[in-house]
Amino acid sequence: MRERIKFWSALVSVLAILAMVAGCAGPSTPSGSPTATTSTPPPAKEIVIGVVAPLTGEAATFGKSTQQGAQLAADEWNAKGGLLGGKIKLVVADDKGDPTEAAAAFTRLIEQDKVVAIVGTVMSKCSLAGAPICQAKKIPMISPTSTNPKVTEVGDFIFRACFIDPFQGTVGAKFAFDNLGVRKAACIFDVGNDYTKGLSEFFRDKFIELGGEIVGFEAHPTGTTDFNAQLTKMISAGPELIYISDYYNDAGLIMKQARALGFKGYFLGGDGWDSPDLVKIGGDAVEGGFFTNHFSKDDPRPEVQNLVKAYTEKFGEPPDALAALAYDAANLLFDAINRAGTTDGPAVRDAMKAANFKAVSGQITFDANRNPVKAAVIIEMKNGQQVYKATVQP
Ligand code: PHE
Image (cartoon, rainbow, N blue to C red; front, side, top):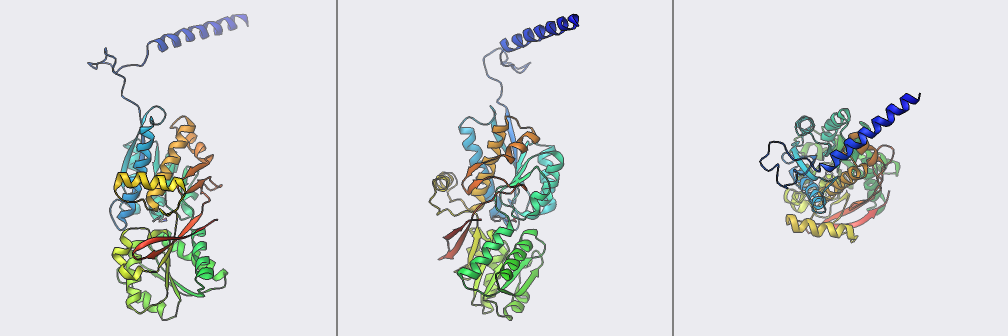
């Protein structure tokens, strides 16, 4: 027994001496480098983070805003000294708004670029393609804006920075019923898109629960540009409001075509309307339309106004909800890595779960399904501009 103790204490002393020697040697320099003998510091360690967004395709303004929001967050962290002693490097991949492209982008970032975590992606249908890949590889993923409930249900490495569509649909239905006094509504949506289909269903169910009547529920295939068949049918049933859960490009066309068919009622939609291109596509038809969103740049809270200032200075345009949520998602992730003290996937996941983060779009803590519980805002389109109407708490 005593022999054993002696052996272990001798081993501990040897290790202690080795550790001291290693410590005295200072930072290691790249061997064979001509500057090895000078005092040049070693290249700073990089923390490589993936960003996936639709930079091209049916909703390209979403991708631009997302990339810019994440970039601003990384630049701010790097200006303050970086993360875990290294600089944050973002590698951005285009999912083109297509689930197959999204799966390829997630795989490429993980396998080739060796990212330690991913901010992305925007559309729920694309996040649903990327999430199983992150879950299998134990790479934490945080979608800034994918609101369909199924996204985080994929597994415990999947988070989001936004509220989910059962809440968004409820906020829309209550606004229509209580504030606009509507009793007859119709819905139109893209049947090939989990987000638009889900959101119309959540709106419908809540509107009926409130005592309203749904007089039309029309699906259209992805890529439709002529909505006259669906609109003619639903308008003939006499809705006072058309709920359009489509993204801005389709929503703009639908409003235009509905007005051309003589529809005089309200238009209401979801976060997918948030784009400077909505008015470019829909023109006057968008006037007086309402939509639910995550953020308004007119919110006077200092966090919002600081972002509006920094973002506008850097990119020459104010942030939309996608930019704000990408900024929030990236900051939340960097904060979790910082608290974890490592980029190890399971440790970052655990730090994310414990987050209590003051984000621009509201305080973020996660529920059991890794969804934040957050307020929504209602926006009205007036003179071609977004005008903040109200904040609705969960
Ligand atoms: N919520 C949309 C989706 O899940 C994406 C989106 C968010 C679009 C915010 C615009 C603004 O597909």
